Length: 365
Image (cartoon, rainbow, N blue to C red; front, top):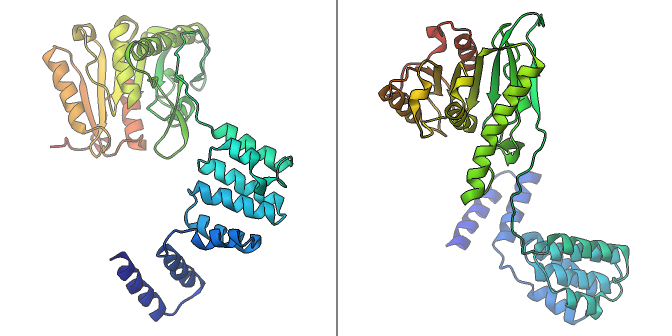
């Protein structure tokens, strides 16, 4: 059935006016319908037609770059043809594709001309770099220094006191990017800081970021969770030493994974916090929620969030209400990302002002 479908596509392609791109698509489609076989190349090798065999193997690995054996045979053909540079590249391709019989490589007469060359040594280096190793992760508890980026408000005066807003970014994010998204937030009343998390974590767009949870299990995972809470507390200590901070106006603002960490911190040291913001995440972390009575609490969530459902925010608010803890639900028009309107709304809330209706979205149902 696949061959018939391909034939129909080829006929369609040939019936239209073709340009170079069309020709390449048709040729690629033709190649994809051919059986992936090295029979022709292997036959040329047996006949010692080294260059012709090499060309046939190149055609094959272009369609099957994961065929380690074909890459290896290509290296042998090129070595026999006296093309040692290309032979070394092909041998490296074999190793990257999974070829692992190093003893055969060292003894194969087809590679005799290649051995001892710089390219051969580089290929062996690639083999060693990709060789599977039996390793296990051992997590070590140790003291370290972490980045905490802080922005003073305009006109900062050492003789005055300021509130503190500490930002905890989401999984795959970074402290610097979070802080840059709120450069003047919230006005001139607060020092705004963002703490960097300790564990590398890739973001969904492929960029390098960080996360608050170690890729561990069991006791190591529990210990890691406890250590980041201590890290947040230490950051507050250091920021209060560095800046003129009013200890009664310290807020945590967590987004996504940072919101769940905010909940754990709020449970661990509620007396040090005036309030906390849970954006696109959070939830009751376990423990006596009565500790949160009298705190200012904002639960913010995008109504179109496809990562963490708005229902989790609604359930979180109900849980707090049942425990006698007051909170404010802030629905905004957005997905699982920081938006200008949401940033403005939270900034207004931190200044103890009412978030206007034009920054709110209707409650989802």
